[in-house]
Length: 96
Image (cartoon, rainbow, N blue to C red; front, top):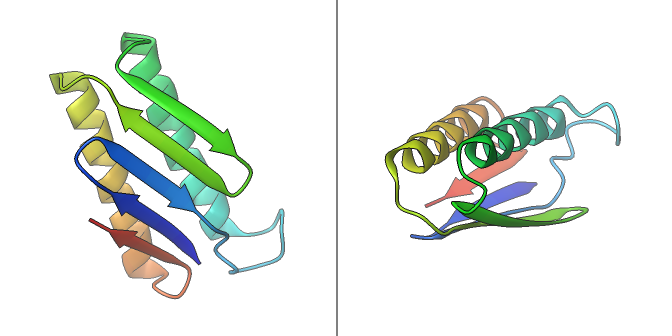
């Protein structure tokens, strides 16, 4: 199961969805796409607004700035992940 744990300035995403075998898992692919797009969008506006560390099945996003663009993109990312969790409750859980 993928776990998305949020706190005020940090988001930790870990695990594997287990929906299908590695490379064919649509839940993992969706999470990767949502998160990568969000990180890239935020960094395209301001390289100093977030910091992230990606280690295979573990990703940490630290929110360094409290600006409107960063807030909006992070909020959107979490909403998309929650929608995915509603559709695949056995494979992804968002903990706020």
